[in-house]
Image 1 (cartoon, rainbow, N blue to C red):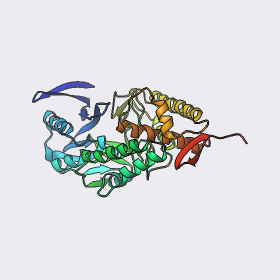
Image 2: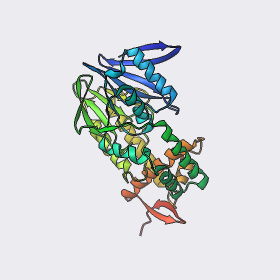
Image 3: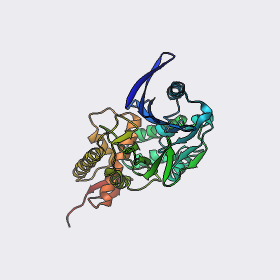
Image 4: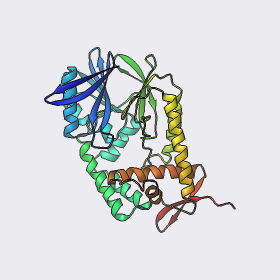
Length: 337
C-alpha cells in the first residue's frame, strides 16, 4: 500500500492508495475519532465513491481536494454508495449528488431509516429524548439530547434522491464486490467483500482499537446486540487479508479482531449483569461505567442507548428482568424462586 501527501491551497491531506483502482481518503469529522475513511474507486469509465462524511465546510473542502488530487472530473462519478445512514457516512451524499449527478445507493432498510430519521416531519429526536427519560436520564439531560439530535439534521441536508442497492453484488473499481448485510451498528449496515483480492470493506462493522457503538433506538430492531453478534459471525471466517475500516487503522487480522470484540462485549455484559443486582436504570449503569469521563451531550446519547442495547440483550437471554417503576424502566437480576 502506498501513502502519499497532497498539498492544495496550503492544506495537507493524506490519501492512501490500496491498489491500482482503490483509494482510502480521510474526511474530517468534528468528533473524537477525527476522520471518517471513505473509499474512491477508479472505474474503466469513471469513478465510484463509498461513503461521504457529514455535510460541513471542512468535509466539502476535503472532497474538493480529493477530486483535484486524483483528477476526478465531476461528471465522471458514476455512483455513490452509502454503507449506512449515520451522518458521518451519509451526510454529504446530497451535496455530492448535486455536484456530480451520480445516483446514491443505500440498503433498503437504511433507505427507510433516512426518511424516518432525517426526513421532513421526523420525530426521531423527540422519541430519542423520551427514550432517555424512560431509561432514567434526568429531564434536563434528555432535553439536551433531543436538541442535540435535532441539530444533527443540518449535517445531512440536502437529502439525495436514493436508489436501493441490489441484494447481492456491486461492481467497484472494475471488480465484483459481494454485499453482506451486517445489522448491528445500524439495522441496514452493509459490508462489501472482494473475494479474489481478499478485501473486506467493513465500514463501522469492525474497527481497530475501539468497538463500534451498538445502540438501541426507537422504531429500530429490539435486539441490536444479538444482530451484531450474528453479523460478526458472518464475516469472521471470510478469507480476508485487509479489512478496510471507516475509523482508525486498517485491520490485518480480521478473525482475531472479531474475537476481541466478542470478548469485550461478554465482559461488558457480565459487568452490567452484576451492577443491576438490585435494580438499576440504564442511565444509572451508564453513569457508573463512565464516571471517570466527562461526556458531552452527544456522547451521553450514545452511552445510554448502548447500555439499553446490552440490557435488552440480557433480557432476551433471560439473564435479567425489566420492570417499570415510577415511569422508568428498571433492570434487575432474576431472583431464585
